[in-house]
Image (tube, rainbow, N blue to C red):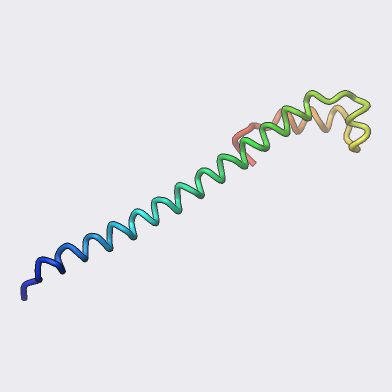
Length: 76
């Protein structure tokens, strides 16, 4: 049972395409996850810059804002 030359090339090519698609999908997922974490970091930094009056306007106390901004930027 021997394979033709064209069949030998076709099988690894399809496997490579599937592998590349899977790698691209995981890469997009990873970039999206990093973007979410960075957005949380940006919003926490903005929260820390608000004055007490501005915090009162959005219904937060300074203690609540401090507790939120002290969270790690990486973890949810």
